[in-house]
Image (cartoon, rainbow, N blue to C red):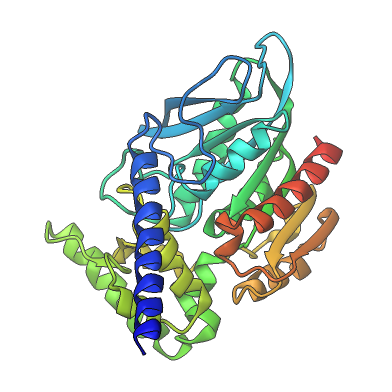
Length: 353
């Protein structure tokens, strides 16, 4: 019995130590000059290696905060293909968007990951406004900026969108033909989910929620308090009780393992007026560029990728690539799944850019 108790104590202390080390690592990462919170992140710019360049630019009067990654031995007199990376809902440029931006820069691309308007370190009021028209414009705004960046070949720009950023990338690519190749990872159709609920779980309350959003907008217009939807914080017990992989693992990612002070699940309730009447797949037949859609085979969000892929009837050489065994959130950080996604993206962009 004493041996068993000792073993349990040892295991418990080991688990605590692992969690402590993880927290310390990510806290330390957050204290670097670039506040990146993904594994293997750049901590300093070293000559001859991939470098990161924090930049700001104006988009429709709003200051946009972005990070540009340049390849090893970057030479501004040469020409490089470029890729825009749109972050997930609730995410920011220092998380998975930055990870993929860095990994693609390691393969010779100039990449840009920007915080969405009204979110992260970008400007805009009210904070955490989350309207599709802004998120879509943010992606074209990245193309505006990166096309003028020294060394970028403006005729070889690709787009990658992750989660909600994937849905908005599909929308941007419908009209913005500067994007010569379009890719999504774990695509999330924000309009469909905000309207119908995740996996169509809230269809019966659509009108009620639209009324609540309308009331929230009226309150804003009257000068009252801005109302927010979403989750501001969550306990470990609440996380453990969350039944869907997307949200349980999402809470762990955003509020525990890869937390960043600029990242939040909150958004203005009035944004639902726009979100619930929008859909990433509306007019998706306008995409005529090469299209790659990547999803985890075990992702409970995969149905959204399947729906969009089927509707993208005019996409050139479209391909659906599944990462065997991966859930939605695991494609953000788990090394083996990230490597599979990156390898496929390199193959895709290498062919079309």
